[in-house]
Length: 406
Image 1 (cartoon, rainbow, N blue to C red):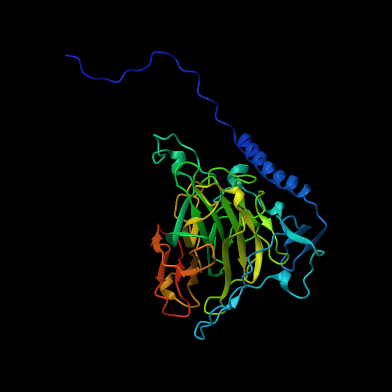
Image 2: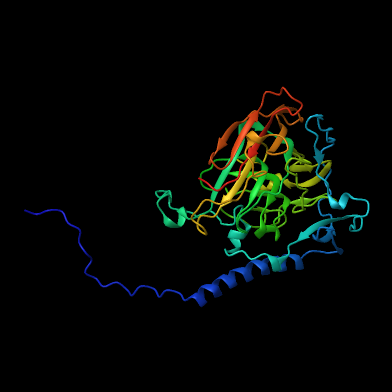
């Protein structure tokens, strides 16, 4: 009786590839680092630098001529609602101080990275990506869930709230902290997302703004203002395609006192609470970003397509995100989110976002935000919302946590 069986191919395969030596692996890593550093050296060499200054906190700035002197929206920043039981402090910026050293009129600052302190291990595409590892493309019939390589990609962990609604901008306040980040290739952030497009293929497009601790990006463990955009669903990066701050072309800087990558003030547990006022607005062919009372600049809508952010957004999203690089360490990261404390601890202990609203029409009408929450790892990070509008904080929530568990 014949039965089913597995057969072996009688052909003799080629010899397996030789395993690289430790020296060869180190050489390849060094080559990748050289490529990343050379990318920025070439970028800086192309700048039309009028003068160079250094801020009190150590940021090295190139002052270049304003290339895009477009007029921002004629909308003044409103006075933030005051709550005597919860006093807050606006985010200060060094270049706005009277004794700050600035460039000549008609120039704007662009940050130079401390390249000697930044030692990422991935490729240039990895470095330019949102998370330090570019998304891997897999065949349509393989989700990658069973692939060891895919399983080892960095894990994004969230505690956020999002609302599916046609909109033309959003605004609110982000409480800024200095959360502990365990590894230099991991980050912790609090941010807003303006999003439109399918999550399949390359269709998703975003504009993002917030506060971030990310050593491999800034060369220190302090919080920094960041901006980010993607036109290709976080899968491709480069000039006019997607990336952080001024790492790729696409961003159009207008402000002479605030710049992408600037260091942020940190709130104190049980003490002073600093917050970043942020507004994103679609206006006159550009997604404009305002921080505090200053229009920072914008992303032109020509970067995006009709199914994406060219003329509107479809999702407003506010909250926290961390990266857990499970390829580097198998155990859950101790990277904190927000203040590193859970929402139930409340005022001066947990991080918050407040007075959240979205722009419901092209004329500028603002509507209170009322999103649904999404938490990926509630034992490590969480969110507690109040969208009733019953307090001076309007739509608000506390968010964050200590990490260390799944």
